[in-house]
Amino acid sequence: MNEKISVLAVVPTLSLSSGGPTETVVGLCESLGKIGVLRDIMCIQSQKSLSKLPDVNYVKTHIHQYYGAKWMLKYYVPGFKKNLSYLVGNNKYNILHCHGIWTYPNHCACNGAIKSKIPLIISPHGMLMERALRIRSFRKFIAWRMYQSEDFRYAHAIHATSHSEAEDIIKLNLKIPIFVIGNGVNLPDNIKRANSTKPIRTALFLGRIHKIKNIESLILAWSKCNPKNWQLNIVGYDEQGLIPEFRNLVQKLGQNDFIKFHGPANETDKKRYFQESSLFILPSYSESFGNVVAEAMSYGLPIITTTGTPWKSIIDNNCGWFVEPDVGSLFTAIEEATKLPENNLLQMGDNGEKYIRTNFNWENISTKMIDVYKWMLGIGEKPNTIIS
Image 1 (cartoon, rainbow, N blue to C red):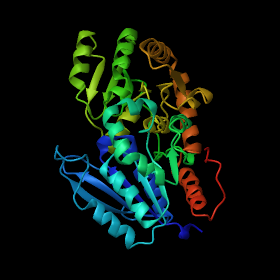
Image 2: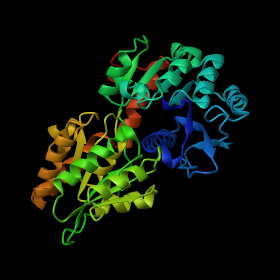
Image 3: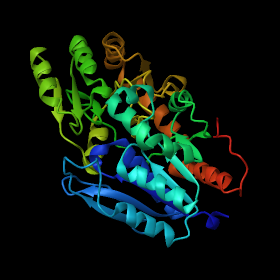
Image 4: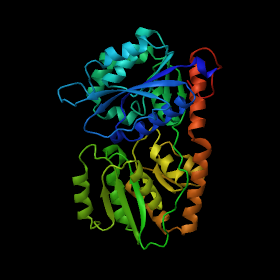
């Protein structure tokens, strides 16, 4: 019955600097492409940034070059709307899956679904969460009035990646079905543990350098704890130009030898960072899913993360620490983790790795997504992932 489903995915960008959304969109598209459900993906690509594209053996990617002129609407590319309309008009798609909101490509996708009269799914990827809406709130208010509310009015369903994201969307009273399906993870073929004989062990933060990630609190908590024979690596793309400020703070705290900053990580770099680390920390104020937590767990790392993420299952499965996103709570978790015997940390890592392999492999995730597609097309029953 899968041959009756033909999906076009639209995403503003597959730039590696976008972090989790790029990983999850590519992973989902490849997984659906392997079974012939998703055929094409449209995106914008900047000449100034590296992108991660789906495997050409499974998905055809239609790329439009973005030159980043500051006077243009973000991700505006002349011809994108026309080309999308042509693609939809000349192919037998019966679902359009839009990843993200606010941007020009997202609006074009919604407009294309309306004109073609095909069902539209919107995956906001955390952009409708309460804390995310507070960022540049005036611009978003204007965008909502101008076009975004109309885009949602046509949507047939909204995809949330966690129940906490769904709860924030429900508060907006959009009166659209909401379904919850988490993101999948590309599971490593083999897990190479960090060398426990090294004199210095490593804790890792990996993600966008952004205020919502609460990195300043992590630095303050790490400095206060100052764990013996441990180092903290902070790895990621500096989206807001915060690194100079953080470097000054680290120097002021006398932590230059214990807190290190690194730039964006490609796939090879990420694998190396995970394999060389003994602990992973994500101190975010808010995450719709926090894909990097699942990635770290797939490499067998124990986790410290916060109640701003949806990872309460870390406690339920004894995979690490789930604490408030404040300096005191992070300090307590770091102190406990870095004083814990190695065998205990390894056991937590094993628990997490098994949990991820069972629940967040792409085969599992894509099967759930296909069930939603079938329901939308009237060829399947309502799945239990629909919550509203």
